[in-house]
Image: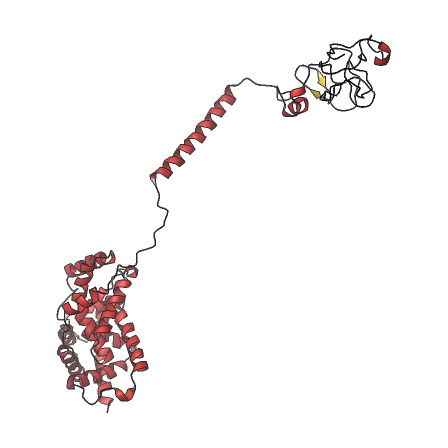
Length: 198
Length: 195
């Protein structure tokens, strides 16, 4: 069976061909000249303002290398160091903050009376109170002071040792405890130790 | 059923694509290279594309508007130039992309003319005979289903081959052959019905 093309369809096909071929061809060059005058640069794709730079990568690499090197160095030192007593460190921050720059050597006189306040222990085995005075009259006293905790005429106004010792700036008027161990300072009648301003 | 006779007729119909552009692989590759250069801002490459397609676009615009309109043709290529960044080569010929733009431009131009020109002032008495034939065909094609109308426009006005139309409509060349046959038959029926 042969499919014959529809004569009507073929006729329409010929009409279409004739209509298309009869259309006047446009003036291509004139049209392009007119169009080219209106052309502008095509819209560029969005580009990030921050372009990846080599310097930034180098900076990051150096920073990372330094961090790794520091970590490795710390790890090596930690492994190579001798084991220390974790309970009694050489200097604890709390101890340093308590004693501070006005820390004094431990008192070698009479032993301190038992105190109810907790004390800090150092690695040399001595104990330090907040104020190392041994007097029991109100406030703090110098170990060699009168023990009443009151200032007297002639005392250095800048004296802030609060009776923790005779530092040479303190005039205790001979009230220091230079008597036998266990006697009251007021009854000792001793003289001042090292008081420069007697 | 033997379809060789129809295929012979269809082959004759396919010769409407007189310039044969895009049918050879070399022509397709050349067009791709031109599009790629034009996307980078090469106006000379876009000029080559313009020279290759302006005749087809001009025919389509004239057929759609019923008159020559150089401004509308220029608008098609201006929009194409501005939208080149969005063009993706998915196998559809560049002419098919231009065809889509031309349809929108023609619609915009028709709306603008309706707004600006009173119907009473349309020059309908002094039209050329060929223009009357074009308008008759135009009116008849407008009454076809969308798919058949697109086949007729792409084949006869844009001048695409069956393979190109098939790529543009995402179907096979054989299916396009059959669609073209049905579209011509339907168009003949509409023209016979028309008073």
